[in-house]
Length: 133
Image 1 (cartoon, rainbow, N blue to C red):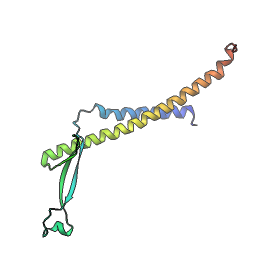
Image 2 (cartoon, one colour):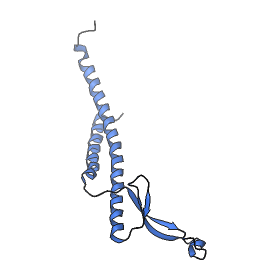
Image 3 (cartoon, rainbow, N blue to C red):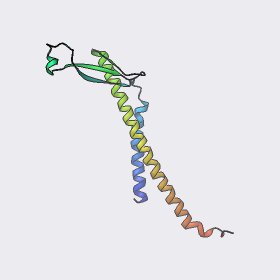
Image 4 (cartoon, helix red, strand yellow):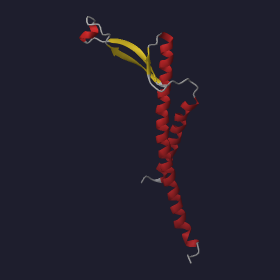
């Protein structure tokens, strides 16, 4: 088991990281659950290049905000706006997941330090208590 000093230093670093992670929650950037990605498709025409394996490429926005995902073709500023909102959403989710892990580790260290302090108190002061009857 690491020394208490090392645990306290680790706890201090975790608290700083946790504060940085929570900063994302205070951001006011709009979020959208979805993804902007490139889709490759066949058009179905037998003489088209896609029939030979050279698929058509288009940028698609997959909207996951409703009950079912739906694919939409967006262009220009609208595409960029939704790309930014979906990236902000993924960033928020990554930060949230890391914050959960950090909180778990903080609580583990908290419990170890509390147990050590309790054991110190028992070792130091137990003799001063009257015996059990």
